[in-house]
Image (cartoon, rainbow, N blue to C red):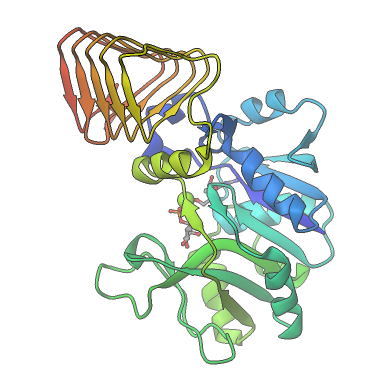
Length: 329
Ligand code: GDD
Ligand code: MG
C-alpha cells in the first residue's frame, strides 16, 4: 500500500530549531523524526511513500539521495506555495498517480498505532475516509472527533475553544482514504482537510473513525518534542561519542553525538543536540540545547528554554523559559 506523509509545515512552534531544519528532520533520540515515522509505516505493509514537501524540501532530498528511508521507497511532491493539509494530500497523490485506497499521516506524529487494524476497520465499513483517534487530556489543541456507536463521525471540530470539546478523542493524524476523496479537493490553492474536507464527509455520512490507546505523541511543540526524545531514547540516551565528565549529573536526558558536559554540571529532563556543550558547574533543566550551542560555566538554562544552533549563553547567565534567538514577531 502507498502513503502520503505530510512534512511541509513550517514548524513555527519549534523555532528556533526549525529555522533551517524542517520539523520532521529534527533528531528524535539521535535519528530524524521522519525515520521513526516511515519505519512504523513500513512495519504495517506500506512500501511507497510520497513525501509532501513545502518548507525546506532540500533538507529531505539531500538526506535521502537514493530515495529510500526507513524501509520504504520515497517520492517527493514539492509545493510551490503551502497548499494546507488537503491541498497537499491531493497534490501529492495526483502527482504520484494514486488510484487505490491509501494512507495519510501527519509526519510529526510518533505512535504505535496498529495501522493494519485501521485499514481493516476502514474496509469493513466501506468508508470514504477513516481517521485514527486517540484520547488526550486537553482536546482544544487538536481536531475533536465525536462518533456514533458504529464509529461513524458525527462532527469534526478543529481546535475548539477550551471546555467546548464534546469528547476527549481527537484526530490522531493517521487516515485511510479512498481515491474518491481526492475528487472533492479543488486543485490550485490551499484546502484544509480538517476544516473543509472532513466536515463535508461528515455531511455525507461517509467518514468513520477508530479509537486506539496506542502510545501517541504529536512532537510539534517544545514540551512534546522533549518528551518524545526522552521516550524513544530507551537504554542509550547518551551518544557514545559524547564526553560527559564523571562528576556531572545527567538524568532523564538525551545527549547527542559529540556533545560535551563539564565537571559538576547538572543536566536533567533535557535534550542536547549534536555538538552542544555545557560548561563546568552549569545547570540545564527541562530545555533543549541546539546543535553546537554552548552553555557557559555556571550558567542556568531551564523552564522549557530552547537554544538555537550555535547560540552561546555566557558564564553565570540565567535563561528561564526563553527561546534564543527569540522568533520574529
Ligand atoms: N505539504 C504540506 N503543506 N504539509 C503541511 C502544510 C502544507 O501547507 N501545513 C501543514 N503541513 C504538515 C505539517 O508539517 C505536519 O506534519 C502536518 O501537516 C500537520 O500540521 P501541524 O501544523 O502539525 O498541525 P497540528 O498539529 O496543529 O494539527 C493537526 O494534527 C493534530 C494531531 O497531531 C491536525 O490534523 C489536528 O486535527 C490533529 O488533531
Ligand atoms: Mg502537529
